[in-house]
Length: 122
Image (tube, rainbow, N blue to C red):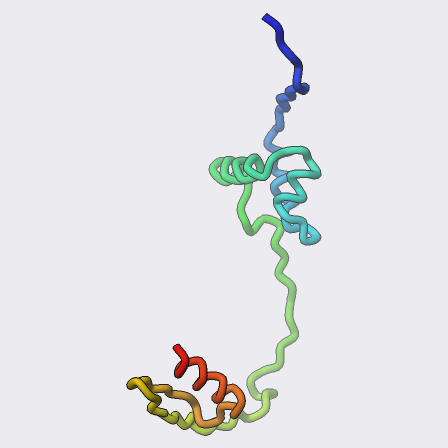
């Protein structure tokens, strides 16, 4: 029997700390799962499997490493008074072949022309 060696098969062992470090690297600096997988020479599917395994063991959560930063937001009293916008005026246009087109009264003339042609031509 004759055989050929096509490549070197490697079987690596990863401990939970290494898996956690790799899974946690996703999203850091905008890194995608694909980029992290390529960087560590594993498949994307392996990262997803590790994520599932680490979640099951209680070692990883999607919120791990999340930062909450204070935001200086204006109070309600600092906001300008809101005026009630005028209610929209709806116009109904009856086209040939029984078609009806409803649109707001403030629609742009060119947009309305394109819309009428599209509906009438359909």
